[in-house]
Length: 195
Image 1: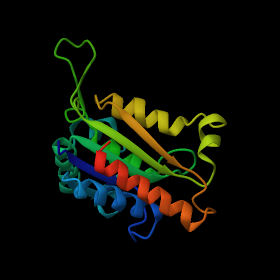
Image 2 (image 1 turned 180 degrees about the horizontal axis):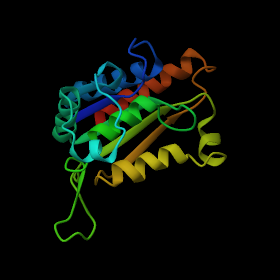
Image 3 (image 1 turned 60 degrees about the horizontal axis):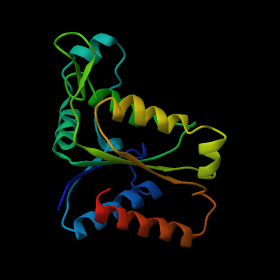
């Protein structure tokens, strides 16, 4: 069964020359090859400002680029987030994008009775693809993968997105081209399955 796949390219450099870009492209190629529909959102190329107040988060109308990205997320059955690990978490630009896009009324809303939140993105799954300079096992065990867990629990799961799967790619700056080629092939395979 074909799916609608949104790929959120979260590397903050708009040059498009990073391994994250190649991974996202490989996933997209695999998905399209299997008949899935794919839309890409390149966060580095969007024009939006950072939210600075609760008033902005709750009441400001999102700009056109954010509204377009929200429509892509709403359209998708499966969402892929691809980004480098910076200071143990996602880059600030991607975090700013998520704050803009995953607002109250789009990702969640308070229930009418005031008892908890309705999760508005239920029925969607996600994959988080993170590149990093350290070994992925060290990130998981020594650092507790806190940045990853925060994104999974406080953003995606809170909006109702489940399941959320992970691909952690360590030592990307020092590994051979063969290592990178194997990961690109793995991304194509995951894209074919859209999971």
